[in-house]
Image (cartoon, rainbow, N blue to C red; front, side):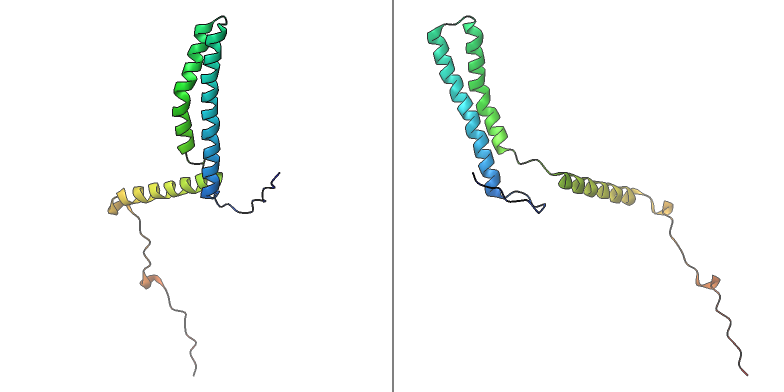
Length: 127
């Protein structure tokens, strides 16, 4: 069995790893679809009770599994907690910037430092 290296970074999985996992998901779902086809053929020859229900379930599997397999295989990997937090912080910063840009100029309070209010330190008088 192949040992997996210890993950010491927050970097996303490589594109090859992501592609390989999507391939595995797709092939496994298509295998279930093939199993539904084989089970349907076996059920027709065996004629068990509730044959109609079993055939409908097999047909539903054969129809909906390819659609679901394509959607799941093409889905990108879920974002990590750090990526979600960074996205939320960026979105909040953009909202604050938009709210500040919409404020009228008259309502914004500016800090004004007036030089006349400052007193100069008294100088020592030397004779």
